[in-house]
Image 1: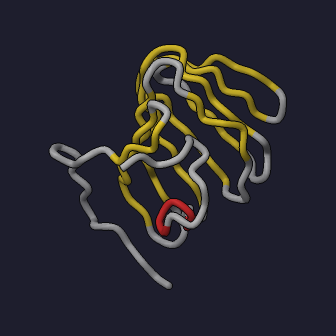
Image 2: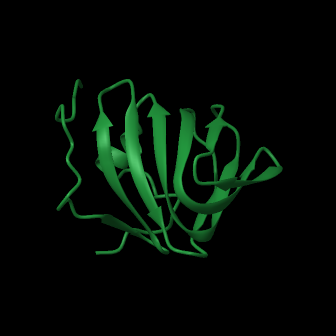
Length: 125
């Protein structure tokens, strides 16, 4: 199934999708090969340990996070980037409220159709 987001995704006025546990997101662009997602974390929010077959690159827009990738921990601040190879177990704890930009290749089908449990916790209505 081929799909594409709009060419311009203007976030002003766009609602945040609440994922629970102090985490929410906005989709910023996608097609079958790539996906970009803006993720907002409250202080103390956890991206639980998980792995997936997608390549992931993350940019820290604001805040402070402790990432753990394949057993190695690193503090990440605004302006820093993170690269996560496919199938590595990784997690993040938000130390100071912040925003991450996650990019995935290929697209996270589980994000689109809701078939997978969110690794940020159960979605809230």
